[in-house]
Image (cartoon, rainbow, N blue to C red):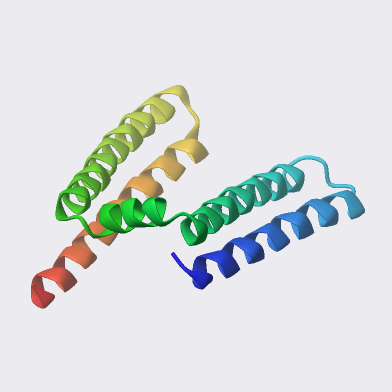
Amino acid sequence: MGNKKLITSILTIIVGTALLIASYVMESYDYWPTLGGAVLVVGIVHFARALKYKKDASYRENIDIQEKDERNRYISMKAWAWSGYIFVFLSAAALIAFKLTGYESLSMFCATAGGLLLSFYVILYLILSKKY
């Protein structure tokens, strides 16, 4: 986390503000104000964390240890793996439920989402098995 994170958070704040302003100028009150507000809040939170990182030495040390610790990396990878498993099974269950209830477009969406995730897994597995 350094100046790069600070600059990224400032750009995120600018994008969120621009989305909010654009949504009110175009009088679009459904999707864009919510997205703009969410992006703005995320930018503000990241900006506050980046400032704290720059100013507080003990916080900086804790963050650096968390990012470089092998145990934390292992736990993070396990969490991503379990998230992927759960997503695939939930999308398969939703696919069946939507198909049985006649929601063809939602059924197709669930099938596509689960299929894309599994396709990415296979492709990345093949790439990483050659690399490592």
